[in-house]
Image 1 (cartoon, helix red, strand yellow):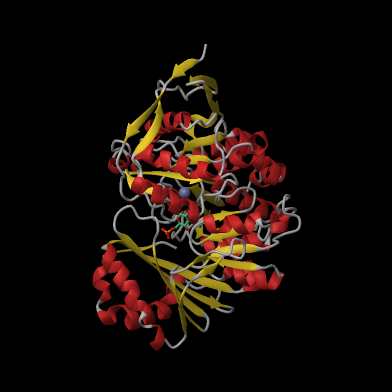
Image 2: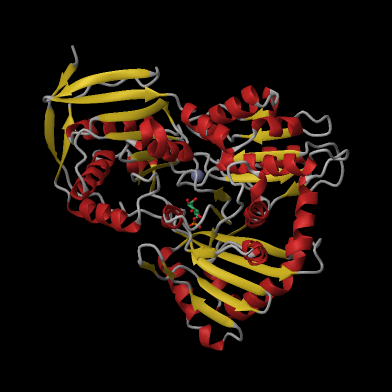
Length: 558
Ligand code: G6P
Ligand code: ZN
C-alpha cells in the first residue's frame, strides 16, 4: 500500500533577492535555510513552468554537488513537487548529481521524458554551514532556464502568498530504487537513480576509451586528477580509476564532502593548490606527472595542467577546436563555436583558419543553449574554466579533460618520445599565434561603488584612442537582446574588458581581462607580455580618478 499524503496550502511572504545571477541563485546557507526559502523558490518555479505547459504527472530531475544543506533542501523540494502534482522525481543517490549529468539525464534518460530539473549547487563557491548554497532550474532541453523564465520566477517570488506542500515523510535517498506515494489520489514517485550511470554511458559514446588507455599505459605518461572534494569524485573514480586504470592514489580528494574539506572548490591556480604543487607549476626542476586535471564543486568547470605547465582556459577551448576531429563523435570537426565575450580571441584565430563560424556571447553558459539547439555550434568555452559541446547543455569538466586526453592520445600515437601538453600548446601558438591573457579580480567591492566605477569608465569611451563599447548581444535564434554585458577597450593587437561578476554572494566583484595577440615572441611569461597593456590601462583609466580606492582585494587568476 502506498503511503498517503495530504496537500496543505501554507501562507508565506516574499523573500527578496531571488533573482538568478549568471547561473541560478547563490546565497549564504544562513539565508537559504531560513523558513520558506526553498519552498518559495520551488513553488515559483512550478507556478511559472505550469503557465507554459501542463506539468501534471511529469518527471523532473533533482540532484546536486553534495554540499551542506542540499539534503534538507531535497526533502523540501519533494514535498512542493508532490503537491504541485509532479508525477516522478529522479534523484541521484544521496542527492549526488553533477551539473552536466543532470543535463544529460534530462535530455536522454527514458528518451528525454523529463521536463526539467532542479540543481542544488553553488558551483565553485565554498560550502558548509558558513558557506554558500545554490539552486537553479534547468528546462526540458537540459539547459539553465533562460532569462525570460528566471525573470518570471523572480517576479513571482516578489508576490508569492502561498505555496503547496504534501505531507510526505522523510524519504530515504541513500538506496537505488523507487518509492511511490499517494498524494490525494495522484501517484508521486521518488526514484533514486545511480549518480554516474547515465553520464558514463554518454562519455563512452563520445570518446575512444581504448585509445586513451594506450596513452595512460605509456611508461612515460602519468596523470593526477583533483576532485577537490566536489561531486566529480564518484564519476572520476568510475571513469579514470575503474575503466582507465589510473591508480586510486592519483585521484585526489575524490570523496565528496559537504564543506569540500574546508576548501574553495574552484579549479584554478590559487584554489587547486594541492594539484598545482603536485604538477610542479612554477617549479624549475623536479619529477612531476605529465598531465593534471581538476574540477569544481559541481564538476562543470575544468582546469588542465601539463608537467610544470598551466593551460589557460581560453587556450584550452582553442586547442580542442583545432583538434576536434580526433574525438570520435566529432569526425566532421568544429561546425561552429562560441565563446563568452571576455574569453580571449584565441578561438577566433582557429575559426578563421579552419573556416567555421564563431559566436561571441555574454558571460553565462545559458547563452550557448540556443545556438546548440539551432545546430549552429558544437563547441563552446569560457575563460572561467568552462568548456563543453552539444552533448549536453551545461559545461562539462570531465568531458573537457577527456578531450585533452584524446588529443594527447591521438598526437602521441606511434611516437617514441612523448609530446607533452606544453608541446601541444607551443605547436598551437606557432600555427595560430598566441593570445597572452590574464584576469584581475577585485572582490567584495561595495555594489553601488562598483556600478559607479563602470559608469565612469563608460564615460571615458570618447577619449579612448582605440575602439570602446559596452557589449550587447543579439541572440540570432530567439532574437532577444542582452545589453550592458561588459566594457571593451580594443586597440591594435590588444584588448581590455571590464565587467561585473554575476556570481557574487556578497558585494560586487569587478573583473578586468587583459589580452594581447602575438605572432612572434610566443614563449614569454604572461605578466611580462601584458605589462605594457595593464600599465597603460591602470594609469590612464583607473588610478587617475582615484578609482583604485574601491578595488580592495586583488587576485590574479589566469
Ligand atoms: C558560472 C557560469 C559561467 C560563468 C562564470 C563566471 O560558472 O556558469 O558561465 O562564466 O560563472 O561568472 P562571473 O559572472 O562570476 O564572471
Ligand atoms: Zn560549477
